[in-house]
Length: 67
Image 1 (cartoon, rainbow, N blue to C red):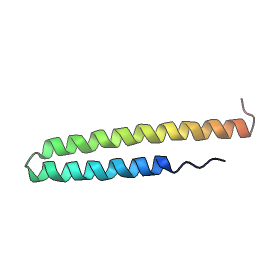
Image 2 (image 1 turned 60 degrees about the horizontal axis):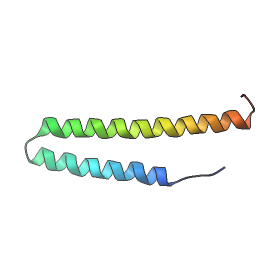
Image 3 (image 1 turned 180 degrees about the vertical axis):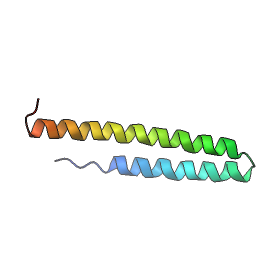
């Protein structure tokens, strides 16, 4: 089984960047925009996780021959 840790680093990188943008926008007094940036970052990460889960379930399906 091939473990790819680059996806974990991508998710962590997105989280760090979103946190920095959120804090900068909040200090500028634009809390609404900061919350939208956080929501958009969450949606991007959610799509990445869904894609990875799809790959996992496809791999499980091929292992147990449930095609």
